Amino acid sequence: MAEATEAYSNSLRDSPAVEYLKSRALSGVNAQSLRLGYVENPLAGHELYRGMLAIPYLTRSGVVTMRFRAIPPHEGPKYRSVPGDEPRMFNTNDLCRREPFVCITEGEFDAMTAHQAGLPAVGIAGVNGWKPYFARAFKGYAAVYILCDNDDKGQGKAFGEKVAAQVTNSRIVILPEGHDVNSFVATEGPDALLDKLEVKR
Image (cartoon, rainbow, N blue to C red; front, side, top):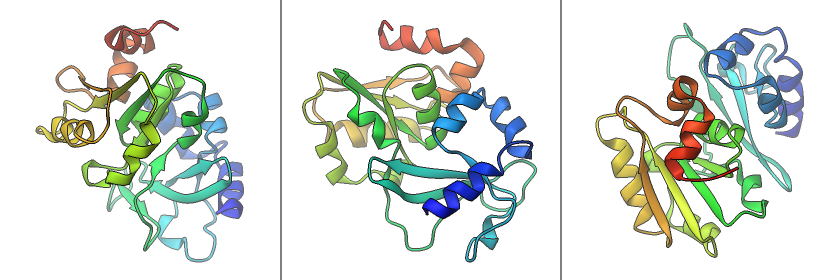
C-alpha cells in the first residue's frame, strides 16, 4: 500500500483528479497532506482502478488500505474497495489531535472537508461501514459530533442514530436539506460548518 500511495500521489498533479477535487472545494494542500492520488499507471492488481482517485487510509503506522473514487464521467461504481478489505475508519490520525471533541462523518470526502475546515474528523465508508468496536476510539471525548447527510432519503439520519446508540457524549448534527458536509461547506463556506457545531477556531 505504501508503494501504491507513493506512485498514485506522484501522478495526481496535472491529472483529471485535480479539477475534480477543486469542484469538491478541496485544496491542493489538503489533498497533499492526505496523500490523495490518481491511478494513471495501475500497480499489479489495481488495473480495475485506472483513471480513479486513490484515497489511502493513513495511520501512524503507515497506509493500511486504499479506496478508489470514480471521477465523472467515469462509468461503473462510484467507489471501489480492495477485495476482501474489512471496514475501517478513514483519517484516524485526527484521533491523535489534542482536542476535546471529534467529528464522525459518513464518507471520506466529508471527513476531508471537515478536516480542511479545521475540525478533527474521521470518516465511515457508508451507513453499513460502522462497526460496534469503532466506538472504543471515541471514549474520553467531551463531545462527539456525528455529521449526518441530508441528501440521501433518510439514510444520513439512520447513520447518525446507529452511531449515537454506541458512542457516549455524541450529538447528531443533521446538515441542511439537500446537503452533506462537503456540499454544505462548498456552498456556504467552512465558517458555516463551525457555526452549526458552535465551535470556535
